[in-house]
Image (tube, rainbow over all chains, first blue to last red; front, top):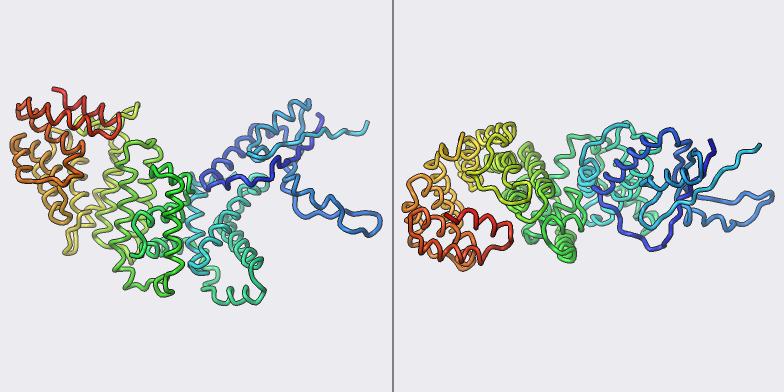
Length: 112
Length: 407
């Protein structure tokens, strides 16, 4: 089955309200439900992205990609029959699609 | 995936804020709250994808501690951090022990019950820092605007920041003198949930449960284990036992005599009665004793008709003596009417000049309408009935009055 890379992107820079502990509890529960539901599709739950540095053949100053974590919050790899199905899975994930963020779903083309 | 308790995040919030403010001081309250928020968010982000750590509370404590230190580091120079660490009340690993949790929460509760802080602000502060509700959630539960919640919270925080050091760390003797204030704020928290007529039942129940949880901690702690606290706790259990039957499915009020007694929670009644038993010692009869006594009589009566009204009348008389209020007299009149008839009930109110807040309220008019109706005086009953309906603060109460006061 084809695999897809899901990137969480923040759509706006405005910092939305911080969730309350009760809301965090709800997010946590929802995420677990989602995980159970799509168990078979989740190849790698990925994680949040931290520090970054560009590695070039030669020593170079920090590249533009260093800002990647400002744009991409986290990643995840799912398997699905079609791009549409992968999008549906990502859209239901409470951690990926929060207010003020969206998911970019990219097909990973396997060689051959 | 391990199951965290239903209110795990809120409970951890209160626990962590209480523990970290004890270690670093109340001056850092806001930074501590930010750090705790960050730690909880980190848990929501990482636990579902990795696994819940074996000791989630200890994990959160370390995360919040580190966030706090990092936050301070950004603001200060290195040596300032070292001095902060040196000033920290270090108790090593023991501060993470569960048995300390109760005392940290209680300590913060005692501190926020400082007399320089108005009671409404104490209540809001307790809901925010000890119960882990945020401003929006508090506003929804107390029917306040968010701006008002912020204002009260700000007031409490300012006062706490300005407290002399020794007041921020009350001694055991100090704790004893503050106990009545702590009991009052817990009582207020409970009644906000119990008496509120507008909120969703689930939200009201939550306030009652929080009040009971904190009171239970208080009752278990040497600084708070007094007969008054036991009576307060009994009162909370006994009222909670009947809570589910006080409203019907559409939110309408169900009068005591209409309530389905088989749906009262027998296990809560049992716990309430046993706390009431423990409260019967010492030489002080508090208002909590009287109120718990009344609640117990209702809970233990097999039916409305078999209620021991003589005992309830007696408890109301004691309540009126310990905490005089014409509202208590009004309640006593109703109990007297059940015991000795409506005329006797009306006689109880004779000579009572109600203050304007009561005279103009639906309660006063409704009781008079009811007693006159039962005594057969249709003219006066009708007069008070229209006054009661006109003064009803909302449609739920108006509908209940119409039902009750129509013969």
